[in-house]
Length: 323
Image (cartoon, rainbow, N blue to C red):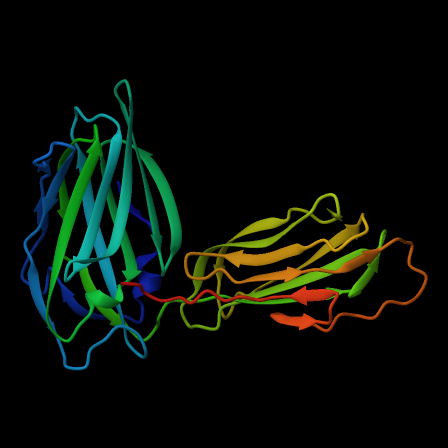
């Protein structure tokens, strides 16, 4: 069975190859794990495959380097349950790692895998059987890209009762470069009426999630959390899973909350992904109701303070590859 953790053509459409096993004259790399000296796990590591990058090369800015990993797993017939980690590294810095979990009940072998990365967020799938082929890409870490001589290497580790016949790394595995860096998320929040509310009123909270970068952000969770003694959400659910946020696919939603209690309750609004997790906090002042006059609207702002009664505090998480 061949499975892609992501859609490789989408990620690589504007990438330019730098090095691959095929360009190095290799048809494949085979890894056969053996017990580590301490006996706690099995381990195998490929040779180092040398390649060169020009003077002034660095990760980021107008050029981003991407690791491509395409491999096949064959589980041994006598395997038990356990975990297998397959990784691709440059200069001993891992830039792509796929975790494969093996579960066995009687004679049935169940394989599931998980990947977290800056290009495709989180991805999880599973099959029944002893063999699977997987593809993935990820933005390389900063320390894995340097001018001059570099080396590419592959590694597998098996833990628990996991037993492998072999791992095969295919010739299209390697490194490319792209003008597209990792996507990021921006959050814009507004609320009305207010900032002072009365019990019984309906508060409308609007969130807009956008990605200003060319590369989309995938696997995003967006929504809000609130004190259920202070508010009742009239249009659930409070959270939603978004497959993608991009320039062409921003996300906008209005939440309607009935005010239930006097005080200064808070509402947390945010979006979460591997790439970034911007947040905002809304803190209105609630008095006893019902309201007897027209309420002013809150100005649509995010990340600023609106008087003493309302605070919308935005925070952006810096993104990019990490060493």
